[in-house]
Length: 544
Ligand SMILES: Nc1nc2c(c(=O)[nH]1)N[C@H]1C(S)=C(S)[C@@H](COP(=O)(O)O)O[C@H]1N2
Ligand SMILES: [Mo]
Image (tube, rainbow, N blue to C red; front, side):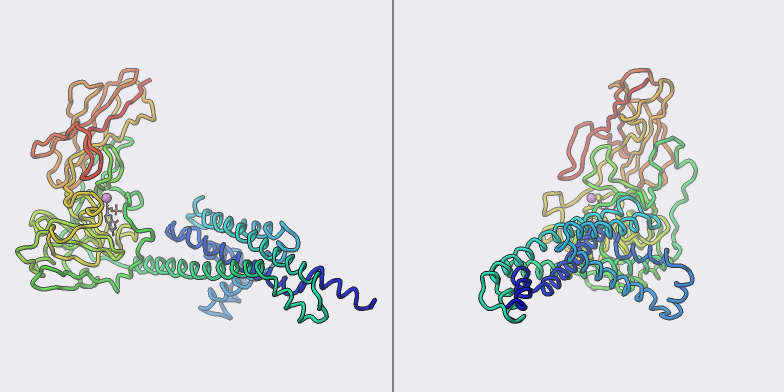
């Protein structure tokens, strides 16, 4: 009896320690999966920024001594990256198992270990080239989720352990390890709760992580294709912008909006990643001949380069949802001419790969004098992914929601009666001509200026009609003509400036534009919905 007593004692107070340790290890692995899945999703939403696996991988590459790197490349050749990720994977699994076991046996040191590993990944993420603080978000949010799941799972595992312990302490036959296992396994509800949580969290995060990784990989692949693309020169180049097209005023919007600064509006949670070599555009619907064109066929056509200012219908008066770029593309009217629209058609419903649709008047797209483009280039490069790679529409004079379909894959010739675009079914108008407007870029209400001559300057637009005049009024006084830059085309915005003799005090500066048809920008205020904002941009400037 005395010889069996100690072992029996151990079994009853802590049943099946090996088994529970194994589950604690699994808890750690599931914690790691959840952490990585959340981080992958956040990284995906940030357009691939701050990916923990890629960041840590590249940190390891940076930190690996040259000799070792050469050795690995010698041994594994082009599989060197796979080798790296296999090693990283094994290290992650080992650390994960440790996190789970330590958290069960020596809380809270499992969490501490998770935080330390997270800190390393955080450092890796924010120190990669071109990384900013935002690149730390995926790891931070991922680790936060990991801590929550770790605590939950360990609590449930403990509940199972103590329920099983209580049972076997009160139990009868504890002679064999097998009997222990059965009694332990039979701890009913806490056991089921633990296992369900473990399996659900594990499976869900594995699926989500794999999907997010695959989507990120598609983005990376599309970016690689994009970077290796060489666009042909334009058969019809856009007008050169002379020095008179820009005014030299500090704080004025540059005539050309850089791609990186161009506003972005779309309904895509994840930017579509399209490989240009598999892209096609179909022209369907009310046409004599349906047709389909590939990217290479499109590039082989004589392309035009056009300066066109794109504007969002949601732009408030004085807002920044507007940008001007040099677009390279093929006139949509030429493709429509090939398809031969039926005489009863009056609209083209363009569809993007992600399902967004826009309704554009057929008459605008077939107009000889409107350069509506199927664009492939933006300011001398292929379209950035978020601006529609590989192909989008750009139509002078119409708000983006009824014309500027990015990632476009189909043009359906139809009627306004039969079909409607994405935003029309949500209360915006079916047709959306851009309203004349003007904006004061400088001075701003935030920065006081000194008394004396102050340059008031900004941009004005009346796409496709052109700006004839811009006027400024101070404190409700007389409208005075501003100086205009030379218009590049009627389809772009125009810079203007006005030399103001500012006296000290607060002053209200107001601007209005007039187009070449003589229409004066109205002072009457309207919100963006349903067809674009109106009113005059007004800035209160304090003068010292
Ligand atoms: N596929 C797709 N294209 C789209 C949209 C969209 O949501 N999805 N939004 C439109 C709107 S409302 C505007 S204002 C412009 C903005 O283009 P940008 O993001 O290149 O500036 O794209 C248009 N094209
Ligand atoms: Mo828009």
